[in-house]
Length: 364
Ligand code: GDP
Image (cartoon, rainbow, N blue to C red):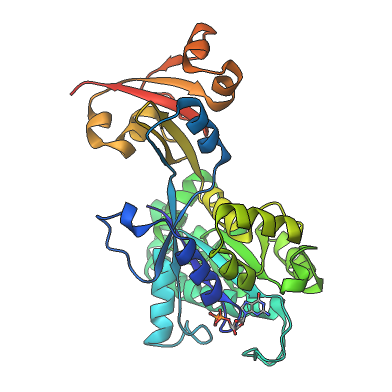
């Protein structure tokens, strides 16, 4: 599956947040066949629709879908020129599909900041520069190979050279690859470069207990302003509170959130935002036995989505009996939805939509 990696400078609250993730984590007993890497935290994706469907179908089991976070520890500064630990840090980032960048936005005299003072923008830049320098190296190596052939008017080489130079210019101006615009065709080539700064990023502003109710402070405002240029999202959390909250049951958690005056825990916001950052969405299967949420990538067609459940479903795919969540809830039952003509028979070219409830028909 796709995974989001958690990065940040030392002492910004990464481990505190990651601990909250692993403790809130989906019961590992539910995943007996996975060997879980200690650096991976599997969480259930919060979705109010699952609860509603469960009330409607009254199944024996209700199974949420899950999402993975990876803790990317390691030395940050100098990573791009460093060996050993620094390289490891970069190679771990290379393996994730999106980046959750934790930024310290709280004051605490007892907790030293690696650079002596709390400055979220400087923190963001410290990490981003390392990633940009690593990408610059990747691109420079390619340019070495391509430049000569491009001079001989080789079409493919010229095509690549133009893209590489555009990237190089961005990197030299300390801009990430994701801020550069490319045509669809160029993008196909860019993807093959496996750049670090092309990955989507979500900034996680870690604030103090005092600031969580208002959801902001002067540091957060600075971060928001700074990342607006990058078109990135900012989530405000208090890692300390999150790590305390995972010990509460759902009722206590609800009360606690009400006291704080917030609607949704930072962890839930983080899970949802990471999920959509990766272009993921949810469809459901529902019956007497089980109501279950499944993760798919937006744009996937019905047979591919069927294959997420079982490869036989994809191979023998005939049709997808589909109703949207809103239509089903409005009708009140599957039978009523069918009578109202809201249950569609979709074929192999159907692009599955977020919230679809699907019954796959297939040949064995
Ligand atoms: P890491 O080095 O980024 O993994 O940071 P840690 O999670 O180990 O946190 C560093 C220190 O900051 C620890 O003493 C945490 O208890 C503290 N800390 C983390 N999050 C918060 C927070 O939201 N508020 C306050 N006041 N302290 C925090």
